[in-house]
Amino acid sequence: MLINCVAYENGMRLADITVEEISDYLERLECFVWVALQDATPEELDKMKEEFNLHELAVEDARHGHQRPKLEEYGESLFVVMHLLESNQGENNPGELNVFVGPNYVLSVRNRSQQHFLEVRERCEREQYLLKEGSGFVLYALMDAVVDRYFPIIDQLESELEEIEEQIFTKGAARSNIEQLYGLKRKIMVLKHAVAPLMEVAGKLSGSRGSAVCSNIRDYFRDVYDHLLRIDASIDTVRDTISTAIQVNLSMGAIENNEVSKRLAAWAGIFAVATALAGIWGMNFERMPELEWEYGYPLALLTICSACLFLYFRFKRIGWL
Image (cartoon, rainbow, N blue to C red; front, side, top):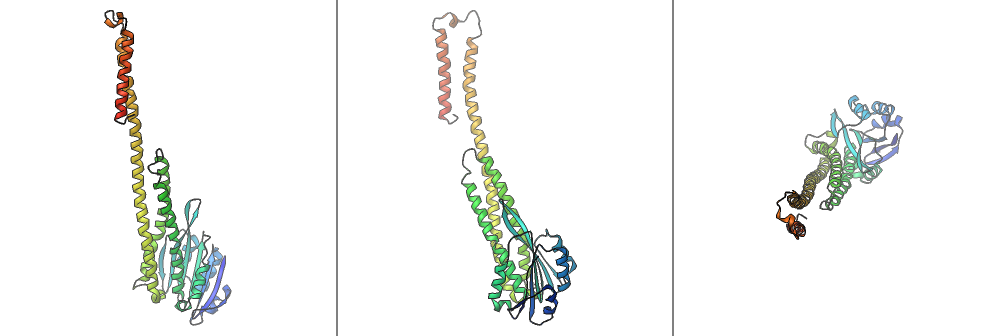
């Protein structure tokens, strides 16, 4: 679906144009065309391939989707893939933004995502002095917007981790905590898979050997790279904290099991003494002095109760009961 098709010249918006007019504006000096598509059909991609003379392999990647973030160069043109993350029922579902960039055009194709970039176009049109740099600045603005949308995600994940950490020492919550921590680990890995390859892309665009299309705004791509470094460091910190929290929860589970085992052992010891004494006096031998004694039965009961009470208070004192 076509979202926008606009021609720009010297940093200023010329007009909204039709797809058929694209080739006419591409022939004009100091002019470039910015087209935005959402969930493009194969027919729309074929039409854009014809208008912009896009490379077949890049179009094929955009058509099939499910690409990792990457940068590919085809002559003077670039093909950039970025992941768009959206929270859906607690999961971060990755969409894609495919950007074709040439000296006089930008084509952005958004797939499997409801995020829009109207504010990016508004920003570019406000900053006309930078929009004069052409399609390279538009690529930077799109990448900067994508990266900025990662910050709320990492903040949300850190908040979820803090909530789980508050429950770590809650008795009986070890299993629930581990399930939540593994779910959080899955979310952080989705973000990691979006950020780590994009760092390589930003590093190439900010380097001295970057594409000529972006040669005048390398400093801006370096700023994007710095943001990605911060996010990547936060991801590593959260991931390490999750691993530590999982180990603490496993240890808490082991401690709880050990407490139960000690209680069972203590009660087993108490009943073992009572059983042993009762077994001794229940052997029915003829010559057992206690059998003929008037106070033998009460004394036996008193002895058993005294032994059990002694063991009970002893185990209580050392914390087994």
